[in-house]
Image 1 (cartoon, rainbow, N blue to C red):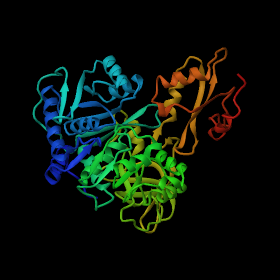
Image 2 (cartoon, rainbow, N blue to C red):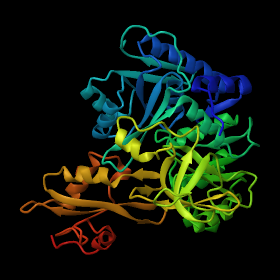
Image 3 (cartoon, rainbow, N blue to C red):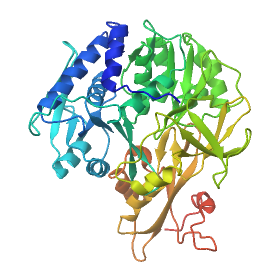
Image 4 (cartoon, one colour):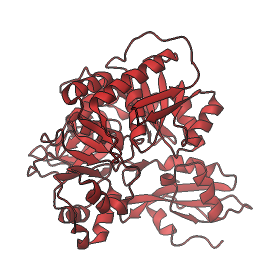
Amino acid sequence: MTTSNETFASFLADLAERFADAPALSSGLGDDVSYACIDRVSREAGESLRQRGLAASDRIAVVVSQEVSGMMALLAAAAALGTMPLREQITPDEARGVLARAGIRALLAPGSGGDGAREAAASLGIPVLRIAWRATDQQLEIDGPSLGPVSPPAPPAPGDIALMLVTSGTTGRPRIVPWTQSGSIAGIRAAIVDKGLGPGMKTVLTLPIALGFGAIEVFVAMASGTLTIIPGQIAPTSIRETIRRYQPDWMSLAAAHYGSLAESGQAAREGIPALRWVASGGAPLRDDLRDAAELILGCPVLNLYGASEAGPISKQPFPVEPLTGAAGRPLMDIRVVDDDGNDLPPGSAGRLLVLGPSVFPGYLDDPDATARAFTADGWLRTGDRAIVHPDGSLSILGRGDDLINRGGDKIDPVEVQTVLNAHPAVLENAVFAIPHARLGSEPAAVVVLRPGHDLSLRDARRWLIDRLSPHKVPRRIAFIDAMPRTPSGKIHRAALPSLLDHPSDR
């Protein structure tokens, strides 16, 4: 497996040399940003941060809006130092935990949006720098206090942190996944599925930048010289209109988008221009949704499989190859092992291990979780069950743990349970996945109250909404008299879904 010595700065410089004034980003309103401009802006922003006392070894957080300005801020920051993207909707409690654990020195935020991150930064004494993208003269302004003496002009090294993604794990708190500079670029280049892409072609971003999915999509598009249109948030029901309006050559869609297409029926084909292909990632795609999308869009659906901790793991290439496994061909070294760690032959189902240059070095501030994530000889345990077929292709059979995959958003039930248990009326609760027609699954919860206490469904949801991002809040909550248990005293998780239809009489 080849390794990379690139950094984000060298990646952007290379793209500027290869594609120069070709458009790289746009809102779709005629405000194209070229590859050369991105390289210039990133270097200027890096110098501005250095003048304020930030060095390549420091870590900052950036509130990333779903627009060109948010992408420009993230690109410029990642080229200069370790950067944690945050959603505008993050709550103060969520932001406070990850900002403190990551050792964030400064928060970059636009003039509006990201109030939860700002509040958390203020409570931790973290300075806030204001960022603003001036589209008229294509400048990225950074305003705010000096954080110390001017740092020496030392650019990030390939092994330094570029991005820090926040993802749920199984420890009861979100995990912070660092991507190195070289590992990030190695994963980006490996994820290019279509060698025929180049200047003059375009895509429309539908995935959230701040969660990492969208950012990687933009980076991959840039690596091939194509234009990414970022028109803002795109509702699943707006995909057909989006394709008609912008006429992209290709797109990446999430499970909810495919569900919306399937629900729209055959009439949705009318007036849709031809695409080369669409990609599916973030969550397994049901066969019926894939078939409906291919019929409506008139192009193949390519599966991409990856993980926050590993980057892109496998892909279906274009032109389409006849492969047994729906997840395509591996992009790194892989092994399928039994529960004892013994290698299994092709065609056998087992636990998937991976090894490659884009695999992360370990969770920030969580050595125990890092130790559990890797084998003694350095292979990453993905947590997924898989089959490697005789033709070398890969099938993913599902998670081997209790993470809830809501349309690509990985939700840790322990994190949600911890928030519920903090309510003074709650004695015990359990959070688990229930099926969802479009998203695949979504969280639900059953709650046992303390004797003599009362809690309404509305107040329980308000408690959660004030402390969690919206996608983590259970859509169904039932109050029960006692938690079902196995003979050993553990919660009988298989019995939980049926309790939603038979709550206690309250």
